[in-house]
Amino acid sequence: MRWFNLILGCVCFMGASPQKSESGTQNGDRTTYYLALQSHDLTKINAALELLKTKTGTFTGAFEAALLMKKSGLISNAGEKLELFKQGRTQLEKALAKNGENAELHFLRLIVQENAPKILHYDSNIKEDASFIGSTFNSQDSSLRQEILNYSKTSVALKTTVFHE
Image (cartoon, rainbow, N blue to C red; front, side):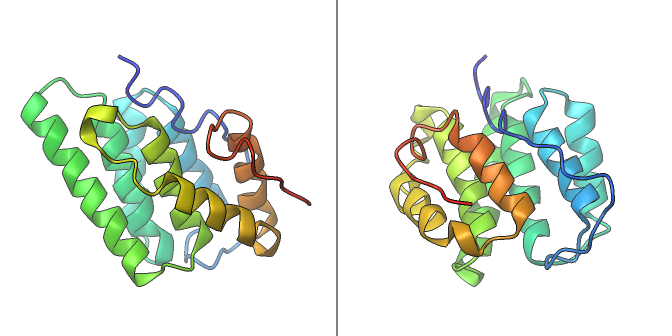
């Protein structure tokens, strides 16, 4: 099933030395979350979700939300699948309501919305998020800029956005 086939085919592996980010997580942890999102492995996704339980900060709820939506595409129980997706969607939208100026939250939503099955009708913010990401690109930290650049190679929404480093 091509659920989230490309959720993060864009992942660029960040440097080996972890640095503290504004989210309260380390870049090494962030890499773990992106790797889990990219994978089709429930074990990795569950491990990343467990790691998030030990963290606090701006990004933890958003990463958890994205991971729940990714997980929903990998389980077989239809009821649980839909419930996990709805839970993740609600959580991500709440994180964005609190931190609407955070580009990484818009980036996570863009990735999810571009790759969510159309039947879920979770695609109404793609243009808005792509525009926001493009307009704030230069002010983002280098690791997020690299993630965006890599994802833009496969993203329909970011294909026409011009990024400058």
